[in-house]
Image 1 (cartoon, rainbow, N blue to C red):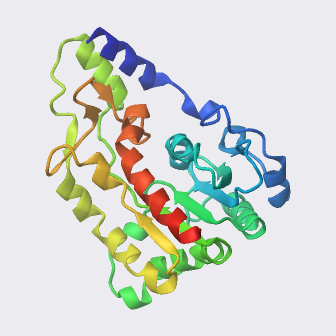
Image 2 (image 1 turned 135 degrees about the horizontal axis):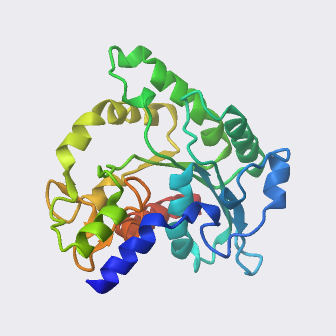
Length: 281
């Protein structure tokens, strides 16, 4: 229990986003040049180039917001020993989301980057979307779908494959899960309620998933990645917000995954990476 208290206390106020996701992700002047010099968040803009022979040919781009910054922490160890990977580039910006009318300079720079880099695989990873969750009246003429299809066009045109991470359930605590865990464990209070039902998530995001169902007709090279399944796989119908074996929170706050939370997603990312790499080769 003492170790769990320390761990959750540390995770509750750690600032992951002041630093790059892993130390091997280095300065990326080449990427900045492809973006015509656009650069705003140092920790979200970096490249990993393994020191390998010249036979590696696969280039990977990860774009999105702070969720993609976190995801790159688990993608790196998955890709690290793959002899086919030539580079993995991260270009993200906190709080930016497609088709919400925010961050136009970032998204313009992102499209320049993908057009000039021409990645083999582009991961698009971010959280939530008001517009993609709006009620649907006529799916055939749905404006959010049309706008998202337009947004995806440069990514799907200039990448061999695009992996779209689906949204996952957020936690709902006043202070954030790690802080709640820390305080409750310290006071010997119950933590059994730190979980959420899966069905309400599916229901509240039903319009979002319905819209995603329309995308393959537009872009056969777009592959959806189910991220909610792994987070909600430990007990049927429930999404636990912490690791019940070591009492480590899965979330630093209510949204961003800790190392234990990312570990829940490892197998899923491994499967999607294997699937897409097989197609690229």
